[in-house]
Length: 342
Ligand SMILES: Cc1cc2nc3c(=O)[nH]c(=O)nc-3n(C[C@H](O)[C@H](O)[C@H](O)COP(=O)(O)OP(=O)(O)OC[C@H]3O[C@@H](n4cnc5c(N)ncnc54)[C@H](O)[C@@H]3O)c2cc1C
Ligand code: FES
Image (cartoon, rainbow, N blue to C red; front, side):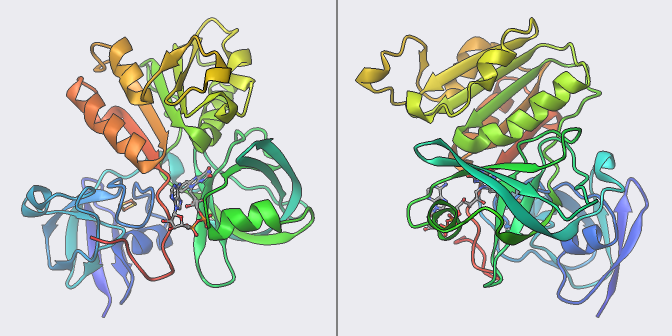
């Protein structure tokens, strides 16, 4: 049975259909809920249920604690409405009017960026461009009904192609396909743009970017957008990888020629042949060493869930305001309809 959902403080309302979760209902109605993984794992879609009955569905305890449940919080990407609801949610104004579309996309090129990363460029049908914000991602819609998410690596102004950086995952369904079978000119189905990880260009605060591995993809989009818009705020980019061969782009070195851009690669397991003189260890720890107080910064973190969550927790303890912390955890997708182990 459909239910009416009212949002505070905006007073927006929408009708949620039977079987839809709150996020799906909101997006279908053009209401910009914040979200990331859509899988109950990242916590980005968290909001408060002020009145009404819900089923919180399945989610990771890391994304929503028992204490938060007791406070009435829920993950809207998993929550079903059992009655009319009133929710408290911070809508994301910047994505209003950007439609989520399903499109065919032709593989224009596939090039090896490193031993385990492929750079894939997609071309949309003639006269079609994807509107998106720097940092957002698209989904590939697989024939078996599953999806795989990849961050867009180009900036919105440079939208002739959609550039993706795809890392090889051992026995990974989609990455195996990309590395072993995908050919130029192949047609794939995509959906997007998705997510609320994007550049907050109007903020006055200096920016800290933290990426692990192919977390560089959305960082590239954010940085190119920041330069395009002429942002003069300091930008500090920490790129965490295992060893030197995992640094699969020279762009950050080029960007570092700008006065306001600082590049700090951090190797967790440098090899003897790397002869590495730079920073070592975990990338979020390098940031903690360099910044005693993060209260005046915007932090963007993207890459493996372990890195993103460890960083976010530690940064909040160092004064970072939760509203100025944006993250995109590259959670693994799960078969359609399934949810992670809780
Ligand atoms: C918002 C978002 C953005 C993303 N952006 C990118 C991106 O820009 N570039 C990119 O390379 N990936 C990105 N990912 C991850 C990507 O969506 C896939 O999860 C990943 O490529 C693995 O897919 P697969 O089909 O190859 O492996 P699957 O078939 O999904 O997994 C196979 C096996 O490997 C395990 N596994 C999957 N991924 C990993 C991993 N990273 N490390 C260890 N074990 C793993 C699974 O649990 C499973 O057992 C993103 C994910 C999200 C949610
Ligand atoms: S937990 Fe809902 S979007 Fe990630």
